[in-house]
Length: 353
Image (cartoon, rainbow, N blue to C red; front, side, top):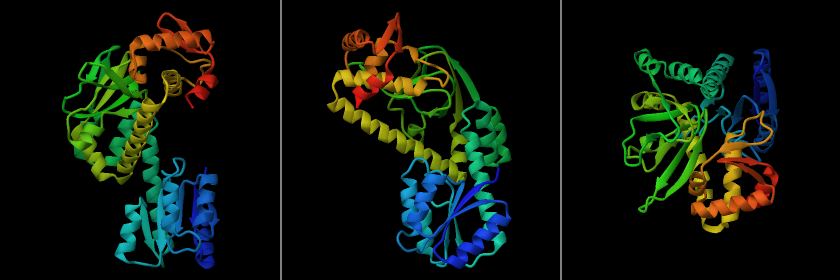
């Protein structure tokens, strides 16, 4: 299947000539006449790569990149700027905003195609890494890093088995690497001076965690524990930083992860401050379902302790137990021993909103 490229260019001659080169190179080409038109087509078509002029009417290239980077569905699309301006300030602005490459007009067909092939190849490697499995990570790290002397270190990466409730790392400890959930479920939590937990993150198969403290070069401000028997891959600090520093695509991906995590935590703090306990318990159940429900499951069931649920909600265990009893009477959930089954996801989701 041919790759889809969106070309945003207001000059008709340049647009038609560039589109012809791309079509001859077996790419599926979509064209847009200005930044506004380009943003709309990018959101609709989801191209594999975007080539965009900077100086355009209605909305310029910088504005188009800004809008696309704010949309989760288009933020990761490789973006190449085209411009007749070779000024360093213009170049720096584009790259600082997140552009992947920069071509100065006039350019020849070989230069254009090489830039496209390079960006698509790097993006394919990045996608491979996020196939969410152990083999995918090894392939990605070895390919993206491209350093023979570090391949052995990658191949010897440690994978450990953690039983349910086993500690993965502890608040106050110093990070030696980042973690990847190969199998299982993990909770991240903070503890106050009275020993009360507040669960801040939940992770499942395919998730990275434990990287924030490593990036900030500080001790862990939270702890991590297995919610069930889990396989955890440990990527050594040196290996991770070698990859992060030498591959801008990986850097951008981790910045996106960090940004999403910060937004989630901000929302959690607001809801803890203003939502009722009933709404917060409903939200916790919906969050567990969204995070851990498998595609082939008709109903979500999970053996979650009332204490862990209370730590997610930020309230007493007894309060959570009473609220769950109310939900059971309302036929929102079913309780059997420690297992909770969600019977009416829509009602719980509506309640949390």
